[in-house]
Length: 144
Image 1 (tube, rainbow, N blue to C red):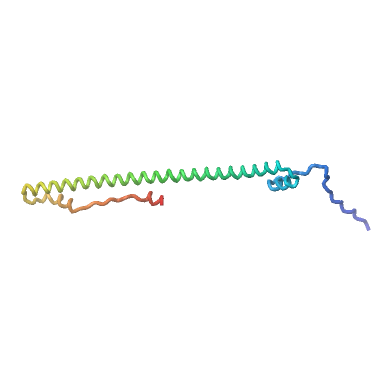
Image 2: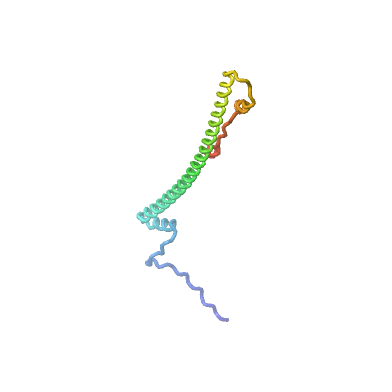
């Protein structure tokens, strides 16, 4: 029977050789604490805190940009709503001016004692009609 060679002996790290530095921040931090290298501990903590602060600042910047986009869109919607409301007010103002003119004409006709004429029907109809304002509240509702 042939003898198998003995298993290789485990190799132990040479205490004189420099230890390999871990790649993770937590590993480097743990090694620095074990070695009581307080400057390295402080430096690692400063790097971590700076990274977190930079990430928070970037997040705030992104949120501010997004909020500004929403604000600009809301202002555009408000402007469009105000333009529509102004058009409605102008139309109502013109309508009421025509109604006031019809009322003035009918008043003058009656004060003069003239008899009823069919041509006055449109003026009477103008007095009986009414107008209403249609407000565009979509942009305001969006802001709630």
